[in-house]
Length: 215
Image 1 (cartoon, helix red, strand yellow):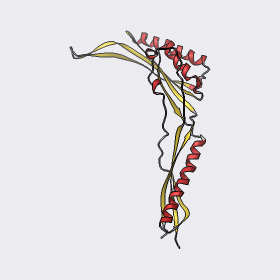
Image 2 (cartoon, rainbow, N blue to C red):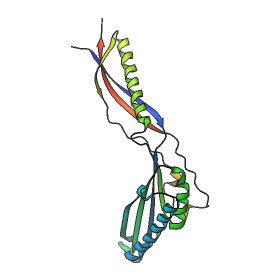
Image 3 (tube, rainbow, N blue to C red):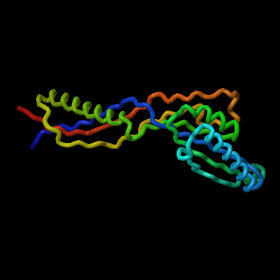
Image 4 (cartoon, helix red, strand yellow):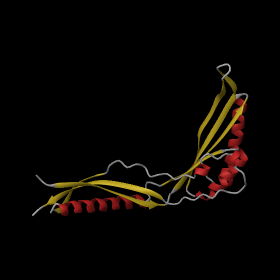
């Protein structure tokens, strides 16, 4: 029976994000669903105007939700839900390669449309070179571990018998907490928010089985 050793190698390498995601949501409450939706539509048009002014192409943003619901409030005295009108909302999701416009976008969207801002969320593209670099580093780490085991056992590392890649969790996403739930009510000054991406981390893991050779 051939002696063998199975090891898992792992690596984490830094990477600059390739794109950033942002969400803008407008909400309004009125007496009728029609009036609530009409106001939300007006504010959505205002957001679209901001996007156009900033040169953000239509292919980079999507209306991901438009909802109208009855709004009620619990009355503790009567033990019943009391009708308070209708709430309408619309959400626009954006995917940008250039984060330079985010600060101005958040400022104008909250000022003109009383929008609620979520994000930003930073993403690393599947073809980012850092992913290949992490895979190579993980393989080197696996061989280094295998060689240590072989040496400790008085053996030599032989050929590679099998390679597999375990499930890898997606890389962590950085967000700007101060803008995660910012609305027009929270803006105290007209100053533009500076948005910095920083480095993210790309993880890779590999399982390699080596043959062990002994004299």
